[in-house]
Amino acid sequence: MQSNVQIDASQLPDEQGRFGTFGGVFVPETLMPAIEQLREEYGRAKADPHFQWQFEELLRTFCGRPTPLYFAERLTQKLGGPRIYFKREDLLHTGAHKINNALGQALLAVRMGKKRLIAETGAGQHGVATATVAARFGLECVVYMGETDMKRQALNVVRMEFLGARVVPVTVGQATLKEAINEAMRDWVTNVRTTHYLLGTVYGPHPYPMMVRDFHQMIGDETRRQILAVEEKLPDLLVACVGGGSNAIGLFHAFLKDENVAMVGVEAGGTGILPGQHAARFQGGRLGVLQGTKTYLLSDEDGQIQLTHSISAGLDYAAVGPEHSYLHDVGRVHYDYATDDEVLEAFQVVAKTEGILPALESTHALAYVIKHAHEMPPNQVVVVNLSGRGDKDVDQLARRLDRLT
Image (cartoon, rainbow, N blue to C red; front, side, top):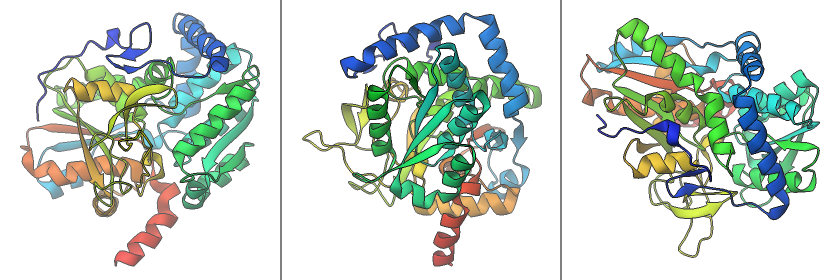
């Protein structure tokens, strides 16, 4: 797979926070002062050498960066196709890439004099990361989480509570990530003077999609240096799972100008591409506005948000980050999907060949590679972003896999 499209990422987004026709700011007037303060403070922080030094130093000493680029030798041999590497974000403190962004936004919150962090979480990894940085900086922390997700990610609920966060169950609607975001935004409107909303993905009103991307861009920067050191060439293909899309943008961003580097974002195919059975926004989704931004989302002809489903709580969301919508429409990134059954199979393959238990979210990307490896020659190089580890999923996996065997 090869791309002939080059993207100058330095021009994205524009001053209005738009990626082409996507993005922007769609929030109540009561939130505009907070949005403007955040945009201005982030602009100053980007230009502040001390902020950048503090961020990079804590990434190194507190979070464990840089993460390794690991050659999956046995999986490569088993599949008989390209050379497969894993970018090991699962080895970070708290077990996923989410800590990169949480740390950056916590530093911003301290700069702005905020005393309280709120967050939404689906799989719980962003909630754990937010609770972690709140404890590190002595901030109050409240995490909104759908009741459905709390049941399937009970381990992460306990972790957040151990770290001092208050986890608020959300019971309306599907009781998953979309509803958790709604509740977090309601809290923010009410407590905007004292509170920073630590949004967990490349979504929401500007500057969040840009800011969260920037706080994850070291994933791709490190990968670029590491793959050149071991292979003396750039990868032929990058693959990452896409919910909101932060881990994928973090990997892709450094390679957008490289026309010979193909990229695939893998969404949640659920039990199949039928209404209410998946969370693959590029499979029949439509343009709309949801929770602060314009992007592709799953809605019916009347604009009502459709139900979603995924085995992975972190991908179970009706919309996708606006930069992904832009990259899809210009043809720079190809978006595919993996079903629940393909993910369960891929999890077992990777666990038994590489001794790694990947998060169900990350396993969507692995499932794509396993499915398509036979189409690629052995002289090609694939990098998969292993965005998180699967400790949080073991109870759910045990129930599902026991039922299948």
